[in-house]
Amino acid sequence: MVNPPSLDRRRFVKRVAWGVGAAVAARSMLAEGTGARADSSSPAASFRPDAEFGLKATRAQAQILPGDPTSVWSIQGQVIHGDRGMLEGSLNAALGPTFRAQVGQNLRIVLDNDLPQETILHWHGLRVPETADGHPRFAVPPGGRYVYDFEVKGPPGTYWYHAHTHRRTGEQVYRGLAGLFVIEDSSEASARLPAGVFDVALAIQDRLFDANNQLAYLASPMDRMRGFLGDRILVNGSAGFGMRVAARPYRLRILNGSNSRIYRLAWSDGSPLTVIGTDGGLLEAPVRKAYVVLGPAERVDLWANFGGRSVGAEVNLVSLPFDGMTPTGPMGSGGLPQGAALTIAKVKVDRLSADRSRLPEKLSGPEHYRFADATNASAPRRIVPTMGHMAFGLNGRVFEMNGVGADERVKLGALEAWEFDNTAVAGSAGGMGMMGMAPMPHPFHIHGGQFQVVRREGVAHAGYVDGGWKDTVLVMPGEKAVVLMRFLDYAGMFLYHCHNLEHEDGGMMRNLLVVA
Ligand code: C2O
Ligand code: CU
Ligand code: CU
Image (cartoon, rainbow, N blue to C red; front, side, top):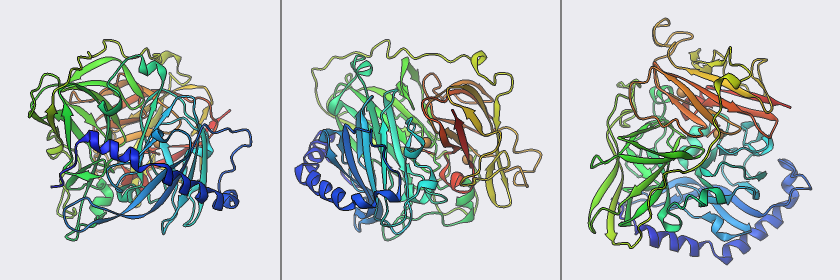
C-alpha cells in the first residue's frame, strides 16, 4: 500500500511545484501555437480573461501501486497569467490539477492535445457558452488545440472537468483525463466553513490493474453493457489513500469520478455524515445521513468534525455494501460487483487543534423552483433509457453528433420539468429485448447548469440528498425522478445523457438545443 504524506505537506509541495518556471514555460508554449488557434474556437475579441491556463493532455507515468509505474493519460496544467493558487497539482498524474476560481472571473483555458487520439474537455456542471462546453463535435485531433473562454458563474461549489470525446469518454476519463473544479464566492465565504488546508477535495475512482500495474479497461462485452467496474479505489489518483488530520472540522468535497461505480458513503464507526452541499453547492442547512448514495459524476460536500477525537484515532470513509441492481456474471472482467463493500480513505488524527468552529445552522439561501411554474408542468419531458441493436439510447434514439429531435428543443430562460424514468424497462421486453434492457442504475445528467430534484418514486433507501442544486441525478431500477431546470444565459447545442460512461459511449446521450 502506498503511504501518502500528510495532507498539509502535500499541498505545500504542490504549491511550490507550480512555481515561476512552469508559468514561463507555459507562456512560450502559448506564443508558439497562437497561429493554430483557428483550428478550434475563436475567442471573441471583447473577451478579457482574468486568468489564463495552459492544459496539455499527454501520456505520462504515474506511481499508483508499489513497483512498476502505470501509464496514464494525464492533464498537465499551468497558470499562464493570474493567481498561481488557482491551479493546484493533484497527487500524481492519474488525475488532472484542481482549479479554484471565483464567481465572476473570466477564464481562458488553452487545451493542447498531445495524445494519439482526438479529445475534448467538458466543464461538468458549469454554465458556459456552447463553444466552451466540450461537446464531442469540438474534439481536436492529435496535435490540435482548443481555446475555452468563459465566465465562471455560480452557484459556488464542487465541480469537475473531464474528457467528452465521441465513444471514447469512458476510456479517456479512465486513463486520467479528469480533474476537480472548485468555485468560490463571497456569499459562500460568509458561511465561514473550514478553508485553506482544511478544505479538501477528494475524487473517488475505481480502477483495475493487470499484473504489470497497467490499467485494464473493458475486457468483455459484459463490461460494456453494465459499465466498467474496477477492484481498486483511487482517491485523487492515489491507491490506499490516507489523510492525516488535526482534531477539528474539515470540509470534504467528494466527487464520484468513477465510470459506473456507485458508492454508499459512510463513516466506518457508524457516526452520521453531515452533508452541507451537493453538485451545485451548499444546501440551505446541514443534513445528517447514516449514508449517502453517490452515483457517477455526483458530488457531496461534508462537514467532517474530527474535533471530538483524540490524537491517534482512526476512522475510515467507506462504501457500505448494497444491492447494486447491476448484472453480474461469468463474463465480467474481474472487477468487484456494483455494491461491494469498499474502503475509500483512511483518516488518522495526528495532532490537536485549538479551532472550535461550529457547524453553521444556515448555509445558503437558494431559490426554490415550483413545479407549477414549469412551462411543461402538465406534460414533463419523459426520458427513458433504452437498448436495441447493440446500442444504448434515450427514448429509443442513439446519439447523433449533430442530430436534434423536434422534441429536444428548450427555450432559453424556460423552467422545464424532466422526468427520468427507470421503471419501464424490465418486464415487457424480458430484460434485454429490442427496446427494453436489463435493469441497471442510470445517473442522468443535463448540460447547461443546475436543476432541482422535486419528486422521486420507488426509492427503497435513505441515501439521496436532494435538497440543493444538482446536475446529475441517480435513478436506480424501479425509480423515477422529476427535476426542474431553468436554461439560463446561453443558447446553443448542449447534451443530456447517462453518466455511466460506458452507457454514454454506447449511445445513451442526445443533443439538446437551447433556442433564444
Ligand atoms: Cu460530466 Cu456530459 O458530462
Ligand atoms: Cu456535464
Ligand atoms: Cu445508464
